[in-house]
Length: 92
Length: 116
Length: 111
Image 1 (cartoon, one colour):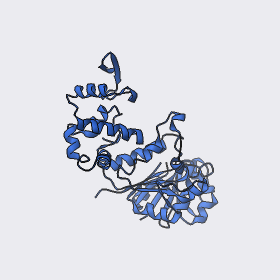
Image 2: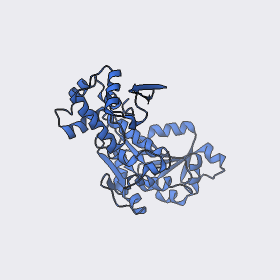
Image 3: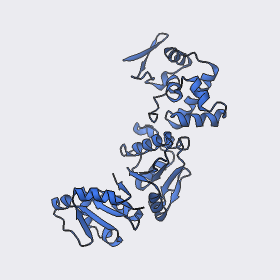
Image 4: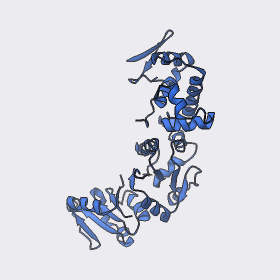
């Protein structure tokens, strides 16, 4: 079973992304939104090899460049992802 | 067959309402006989530390509440070994310690996951 | 404000008729609470009420029906710890009514 992990906290002030990377499986993906989008600056995310998505408007608002190891999605894309994966785990 | 639910509790006991809310979800699910699991992760493992004094901060005794999980039919209670070790805590009797790989498989096994 | 008069004292109740202060509880208060529910307390009732007080002292919460049955079976045996016995004693809603008569808060996980 695959899980879409949704993270909305900056990994530089918070342990959610670290824990998520420690526990997520090969089939899983991570969606960054809100301050979670700052995760695009985190080398740990990239080296883990897990699929990474970022919410386009949050990336744009923060003027973050999209690295080649991540994909950006709009809200309809977010909805589609939550359907494509077996379950969604929102790290509240 | 009702869907199974894993609740991941990752906040310290007195840092806000999260720990209490996670427990309330689990107890309500248990009262309805749902297949439910509880995992303590990150600072959530501090909820398992012994001899805490909730009264000192005018809170309800979460530790005592946790002892009732078995009576509510919640037998699948786990704690992240990594989080315990990181905080110098010894594995408690009330939760089964799990490594990263096992937690990954645990999350896989449940239909739904709530992380608080 | 909801109150219950016992002797010369007026005790505060919440909107559902549960004691606001756990320490207000006594045998006399239990009788008055039961009378308000048109219930006569027997030895069988008292046994469960004292057990509930014990449950609360141990776990700091009021049990829903299933844990109440389980705990009663554990402490008093399966003859008492079953839904038939408890429903009969407490008009079909043992978790809510017994908690009320035992002076405990309303069980929050019992919807």
